[in-house]
Amino acid sequence: MTVLSCPEARSMVSDYIDGDLPPALARSLEEHLQSCPWCPPLYASLVETLADLKAHDDAAGVERLVARVLDAIARPSDGP
Amino acid sequence: MDPRNDLDLIEAAKAGDTASFGELVRRHAPRLLALARQFVGPDAAEDVLQEAMVDAYRGLPGFAGHAAVGTWLYRIAVNRCLQERRRAKPPVVDVEPMELLARWEDPDYSVDPALVAARRAHAETLQALLGQLPEGYRNALLLHDGQGLSASELAAVTGIPLGTAKSNIRRSRLALFALLAQDDRGLLEEAR
Image 1 (cartoon, rainbow over the protein chains, first blue to last red):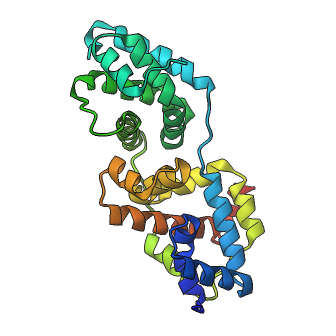
Image 2: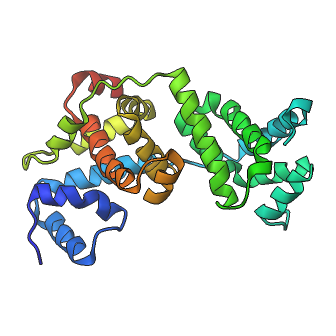
Image 3: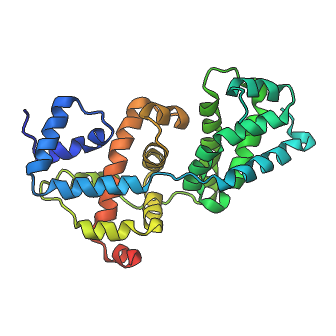
């Protein structure tokens, strides 16, 4: 197994989050995150931050939007 | 639920059945609304999407089915959102992305998780920081992390090469985080 330095490990975390890291490197990164005193808080905080960006559905606006679009395309100048 | 597939609805709408186009919008609206709210904010999202869907309706005769219907609508919506964002808020890039990325290469770089959590608790802080990043980084964060687009979808909807999309995904995450976590008293006060 490859022993990673902190900068090497940090350069891989984005691909690891997306599941794009080759399995052997993923295992090396996981090993680093088990043993390193500095990187785990960085990694955990990064994952939580990216989760905050995730969009949430809002079904309430859907019917309002459909009505607005149908109203707009009903105007004579908006034919296909 | 209307049993017809998206292409059936497109054909019916092309023939003048506006209700079929309405069903198409209804089907894809949750994802499009989420996109628009993140890009232009909740107040402008429905206005921008209405314009985008009228664009789509007018473009029906040119839709040849080369892309999935959802992808086609999504691309039109992204274009409208980017136009609106540039019009309403010209990007002010006042951070140096390479300097932010370089912090991750310092073996001693670490953060105070409690501080990061405190800042993250304020949604407007993340939005403000997103506004400071270059457009390519912001698009990567909103479309990949926010909307779940793959790197190739990000490349397709924003018109950039796949390699650039992948690079922007990696760099934008590290840059946003370094900006969020930096020891800046002004930001800390803002977060409180």
